[in-house]
Image (cartoon, rainbow, N blue to C red; front, side, top):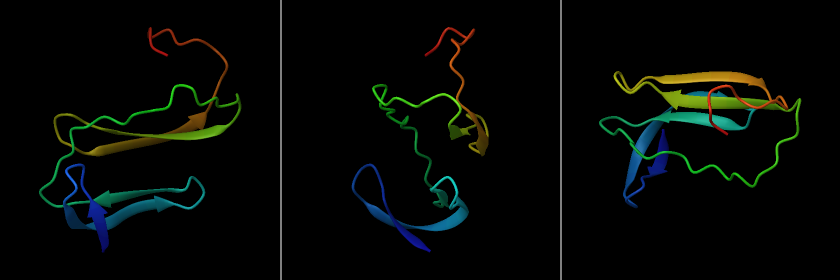
Length: 82
């Protein structure tokens, strides 16, 4: 179990669900808590092309997590986002 500090500064216990020492990330499950905040990503951070990255997102309807890994490419997106 892991003690987690919630966005409103409360503390609760969570359970480690997944981790990757390679990517230096961990996913912790907290019962009866759904965070609706979005991550603040530093747009000034420069990630060089060909670097490995990982992305984690949540399905809105079910709340389940999705994750994928990939490699940064130096090419604009056709989706109209940065």
